Amino acid sequence: MNILSMYRGRIIKFGFIAAISAVVPFVALSAPVKQAATEPVIFNITMSEYKFAVDGQKDGDPIRLETGKPYRFIFHNIGTSQHEALIGQKPKIITGGFKHDFTTNLLEDVETTITNGQETSGFTIGAAGLAEFELLTKQDIAIEFTLPDDKVGDWEMGCFVSLDPNATDDNPGAGHYDVGMHLPVTVVKGSA
Ligand SMILES: [Cu+2]
Image (cartoon, rainbow, N blue to C red; front, side, top):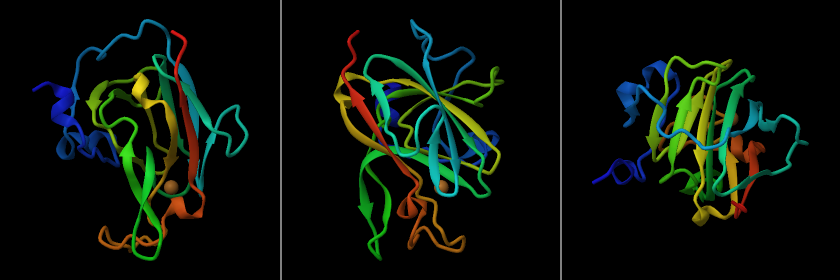
């Protein structure tokens, strides 16, 4: 069994990066997982109440990706509350008609490298099966990945943190997604 199949489908979830070893399956590496042949294309994405905004793009414009190309998404939580990012398809409908989590996650079987989002990172984590991550206010994180051709299609980035801070996992109620915190992600076949 290789690492990809071991982690496939698992949820990786963390709030504070230093704490993740206790709660998630991951592989800590002393060297980067895979050196991309070319420098990754960078998207700087801010999270706030209640939207994702991409540097250089108009609000609501899709993030356009090509298969076979390395990308680095650098997330900055500039808001006043915790936010999370999931990239997937088909949000699940929960009690109250709200949407919570995706049925399919873009990176669920894609090797992904996680760093602290700064120019130099004190750590590099290689993970397969990354489904979601949470950032407290003022935190940054970067993920790096290259998509295979079977990811071509329409996806979406979403934050499903509950609006009610006292909501439970069993009944999360309305979340940030329901008030607009989502953004289309379009994946097309790369020319390479
Ligand atoms: Cu949010």
